Image (cartoon, rainbow over all chains, first blue to last red; front, side, top):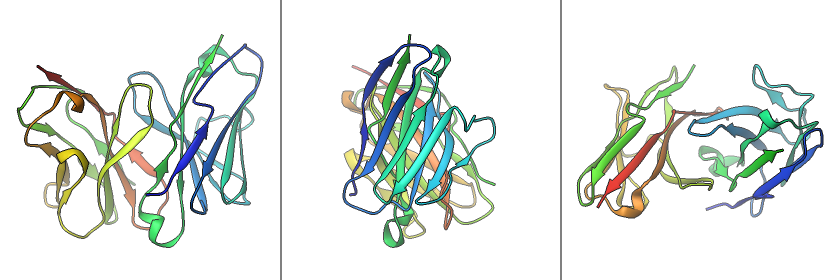
Length: 117
Length: 113
């Protein structure tokens, strides 16, 4: 199957700083990428959907100025958590979907555990 | 609109016993249905998926699931539980042509030796 690589897998940052998480599709063109957030012992909640070359579409309740998403190429999307606070500590997972025959499945990255201290 | 309900946030089975994890979906269009497994501090791994072909879908690690339209269900089963099956399992639904996945709240499977 297709491979999605997410980096970093773990990051610890100080409150007030910004953190960038990368999501790369290694062997297919990801026309659409999704960013999810998972709180401890809870399910994945979609934060935003991004299409290559377009502005991301954010789910209700997600602050787009705080969670900046860029999908500048068909193989890379980034999520930047700006001015991070302890309540932003969570597990962030991206997934990517390609066109045509790959469109029935979204391939997930390994996830990034963000801890804000 | 689509949604998934997973009955039972925690399921415990003895090693060698049948595993049954329940998933019911709601969808206004023919759905794609998925089961994912998540081990601690790891991402999601696809176990199996239903995409309108055979209603009985076989996945990895001996898991299978049956799509029952009349019951709007997609329950996950495995005949004999193994210790390595202990993990969090998520059911998800997606549209035919849509992009977004809707996940259930997850079921934590414990396997008792």
